[in-house]
Image (cartoon, rainbow over all chains, first blue to last red; front, top):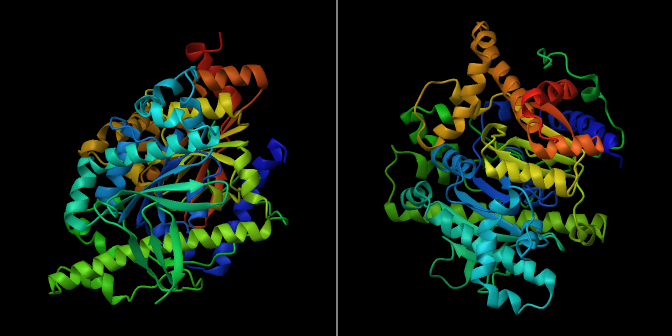
Length: 230
Length: 304
């Protein structure tokens, strides 16, 4: 698809989408215009292969979103902080989800000793620090793709620590049971798995989530298994 | 210049494409609307009552919670046994969490059914044409409203779609998208009814959010005369949303990455769009990119 085509496609496709949505449910847009009450704050990567609402199978109004390079949660970054403040203190979301992913360009850029250039070196500094702190573990991984995956997972764990110490999030956890989750999206298969960090896994073993159609069992390795409902 | 009249959208935005398949999902939740930033404390305390209760659960994966449950735990007037209440909350949180994983599994299966190599291709790398800079607002998932597929748009979303000079977060996104991914279009997409813009029109201390919202207050100050001449508050608010998009487009043009890439390759070009919840449509503000670039380079030329 040429770049001009993509541009026209997006605008005309929006028209088709809006018509379809309104036809399906005439109240859809009037209700959206009334306000938002998302239950999930998603902090993910800007990567074009990780469209949060699509991969979660959700709809407009469901997920409040911040996406940046390599889903880094930098404690002093006022951009992310403002998003967290608004979502947690004002919108009162019930879940904060930090999502990393495989084949992350940010993690790949932070692995070698060379410069990426420009402001990116500064932005990726938390990843560089992780690489330094976990050099032994990372260097032992022979497959480069796997090394990128591991660094991206360490990055989620580090981000969760920052989130769990954010004052607004701490208050919300104590006052109303806000949940914080560290998850990982495998682009190679389209699946999300829990990494076993955050509130849900603090001091627990297997974590069983019972749903209407089945139950999810999050094992110690973070792999989610689906079982028939009991 | 910005085209002020959004009643008269760009004709491109009204063309239907026959080839487009609208998203199949019919999931929908009832929501009680609030303008979040402007809660009175009473409104804020009732915010928990805004739990989404699915009404038309046409997809079997959407978990339905007995409607009494969230109301019970929200209402401060109902006397509920504390133990029960905690159990309800825990159950509710588990089910909302569960829902996401179930949806994701069915979405992944659906993609593989349509194209067995879908994820293999995705895993091979990204080559997006677009950089989308939009609002964090949950009602504007970039990909869904534009019909773009995973892999098509690199996305940054923050409060009120701001592009601030000293924000390393957004500056890294622009630099990566322009220099490394070589995107062809950069879209700054605002939306009417933006909570961040509304908050900035209200002189009030908003704590941690002050430094961020200050940037929108600056947009107001830059266009104070024009905005204050608009008598109708709603219309003034809508206009500030448009002017904010326009100013953020200017901020993108001020970056070295954009200027250098454009001088060298003739791309990316900048677009300012506004999304309207009332009808779900995008309007192109027809930002005059070349004129902005020319004007800006008198002072901000970073191509040399």
